[in-house]
Image 1 (cartoon, rainbow, N blue to C red):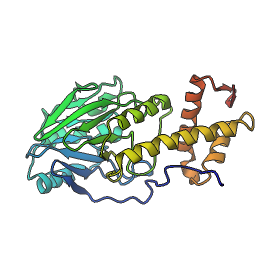
Image 2: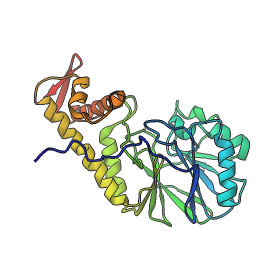
Image 3: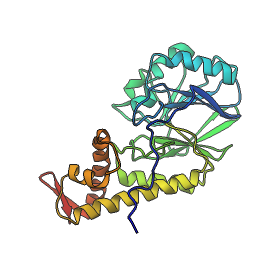
Image 4: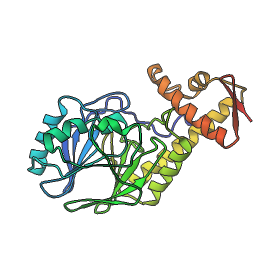
Length: 292
C-alpha cells in the first residue's frame, strides 16, 4: 500500500468568498480583501452580536478598500453604522493592521482587546486593553471566551462562542490548507498542544481567519493533528537516509507542492526539526540535521 503524502489535501489556492456573508443570527463576516497564497481570499473579519453594535473580531491588513466594504457590510447585515469594540486574535499584520482604519471611521474610542505582545502591538497605533486566557468578552447576545493557543504566535487567542459551540480560530486552524509556524516566533510543540486544547472544547463549528466556515469542527481538528504527526514521521524517515539540509528534506516531502511554496514548506520542516531537537531526537551541525 502506497504511503500517504499528506493528510490535509485542500489549499487556499483558488478559494473564493463573497465580500460579506451572514453565517448565523449572531455571526457575520466581511472580507479583508488581502488575497494571497497563505491568506486565501483575505482575512475574515467577523461581526459578532445580535444588536446594532456588534463587536468586530480581527481587522484585516489595512487595505484601502476595506473601510467602505465594512461600512456596507455593517449596514446590510446588521442595519448598523457602529461597532462596540475591537477584538483581535494575534498581532500579525493581517489581523491587527486594520485598526488604524477602523477607529477613525467607526469610533476613535473603540477599545482594542487582545493578549499583549510587546514590540508587536504597535501596529495598532492605539493602546491595547489586555485580555488573557479564560476571560469573557461579550456583545449583545454573544459571549466569547478567550482560549490561549500559542504556537503560530505567542500571543494567539482563539475565542469560544458559547451560544453556538463555535470557535474563532484565527490562524490556528484555517478553512483550507494548513497554517505556517513562523521561524522567528512559532513553536510547533505549543501548536500541537493548542490543537488538542481546542479538541477538548468539543466544538461544532469553526470560524477561521482565512477560508470558509468549517462545519465538521472536531473532524477538522483531528485532521490537523494527524497531518502534523505524518509530517514529523516524514522528516524522521528522511533523516534515516543520513544528515540533510532543510531544502533537501522539503524536496523529498513536499513533492505535490508548487516550488514557489517551498520556502514556506521549509519553515514548517524547520519547526518540526526544532520540536524534535527539544525532544532530543535530532541534532543540527553546520546546517545539516541528523538523528541523535
